[in-house]
Structures are given as C-alpha cells and as structure tokens.
Length: 403
Image (cartoon, rainbow, N blue to C red):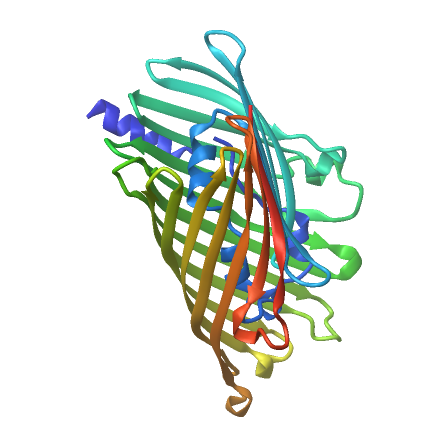
C-alpha cells in the first residue's frame, strides 16, 4: 500500500515537458484555415516508418531529422537530438533538442537536465532551458520512480519563462504565470513496451500593453502507445491514441478593429499499424490513422462571425521495403485519406459549407544504411488523385544517426 500511495503522489507532483508555451503561440490564434484537404495526409506520408521508429527507441542516444516539402514556401522540419551520460554512480546528465516547424507552430527547445539517484528506485533532478534573453528561460524539477525492472514512472513541473515579470526587456508581463506539469509511465511487457503520458499547461494570461492586448492560453495533451518491434516469425505492432485540448484568446481594449477573438481546438487521434518481415530481404508495413477535430472560433466584438468546424479523416497506408544491397534498400508506399470537413457559421447558416476529402499519393525512395551508425532516406511523391495537373507532390529527406 505504501508503494502504491507513493506512486500516486509522484504522479500527482509531476522527465522535462516535451512542449511548453512559447511566444510564437501568440502569432496566429486560428491556424485551421491553413490546413487544406492534403495537409494531414502529407504529415502522415512524410512520417518515419516503423522500423526507423523502433531503431530509434532501441538506441541510447542519437540525432534524427526529417525535412519535407509542404508547399512552394514551407518546409516541414522535425529534428531531435538526445544525449545522456552517467557522470558517476549517482548523478546523470541529459541533453535534448527538439525543433518542429509546420503550418501550425514553429518551435525550438533545448533541455539540460541533472538527475541524482536512484536510491531505492527513486531519482530526483532539475532541468531547464537556458536562453540569451533571461525572460525566456525555463526551470523545473522532476522525480522518477523505478519500482522494478521494466517499470518507470516520472513526474515534473516546469516554471516557464520564470524570470519574465522581473527581467524582461519590454512592458509585457504575465498576469497569470505559465507552468507545465507532466506525468508519465513506461512499462516493459513480455513482448513490447507501453508508454503513457499526460501534459498540462496551466492557464496563463500575458499582457501586451503596447497592443492594448491580453492573451490567454491553456493546453492539455495525453497519449497512450504500445510498441512491439517486428522480428523473424513475429509480427511487429504499434497502437497509439492521443488527445489534445487547446484554448487561446485575445482581448483588446479598446478594440476598434474588432480583433478580440477566442479559439478552441479538440483533437482525437487513433493509429494502428503492423509490420511483417517477408523473408530475408522484404518487409511490409500497413496500418491506418483515424482523426477527429473540432474547432470553435468566436469574436467578442463581432458575434455574428462565430465559426464551428468539424473534420474527420481516415488514413490507410501500406509500405513495402526491399533490401537491394546490404547498404541500400528501396521503399514504395501508398497513402490514402478520405473524410469530411464541415464549416458552420451559427449566425449565418447560408454561409456554412462542407468539403469531401479524397486524397491518394504514391511515395518512392531509397534508404542508405550505414550499419549501426545510422541511415539516410531520400523520397519523392506523386499525387495520384490529381496526377494530370499535379503529378509531382514534393519529397522529403530523413536521416538518423546513433551515438
């Protein structure tokens, strides 16, 4: 009973948060109009294959990058670096970099962490994100408990922009300071690993006097994922569910331009995929993703402009990889997306409309393998649903190197 109570306490008093509030969230409140009918399928077809994901999970540290063409002016950029070293028998150091740029948000984080322990399975640490501008620096504390082999629970709290009101360079200030709480569980089962995480950005209020503006923000994310890597005679499996809640608001006083706005997003995603090794040279991956999005946008000074969006998509796909040489493999993949996007204006029903989503793409490329050192992949994409007018649909480059 004591151990169960202690585990609950640790989870309530929450490794460093993977994402926290950044000022870029203030740039655009409602990004949904930027997501055309192809957008989410593009994110899916540019994502890493399962064997890349599993190779990264099995490593103790490394660097990953994925760069993909979203359109003529924007590049999907996702890069990560993880490094950990034991300094002695009771102190460890971690460094983590995460950069993500897409149509929704552009962010860059670099986390430093010192963790002491374990003692009776317990570890304690501090972490932070130092910045040249002290107003943007974050600092936090974490606790980890490993009660037995293959079981790890962690909890953290992060004081975001903790110096802002005292050491900032502008007249901006937090009327309610930001903080991020995270808790998670990793459980190694007989034939796989299950991970659960919950992340909460507490409500904040950030005042910008030069704009007569008060910005509000809160966000919650949670996820559950199971991974079982493929092996000879055994099907690999990945199952995942995630939920995101995000609310942002702008209040201007006075507001002659009628810019006061509130935005609400809820997203549910479920994914299931499997991989089979077909002989010594071939592998087949297949699966799909189901997504539901609901959006609400309101304008305090123009109530007749309120908008409600509903979007759902199903995205089945299949990837076939074949080893051509020990150092190079080919990949051919097909991605589909079908669903519906509805836009409703409660005070102007005649302006409401809906769109059907039907997309299909073919991706081909090569993976260059450098033994245990890493991989580099080069890919091109064909737009099958609009091949007469728009056959070429961009491409992407991804790489992964292990330490």
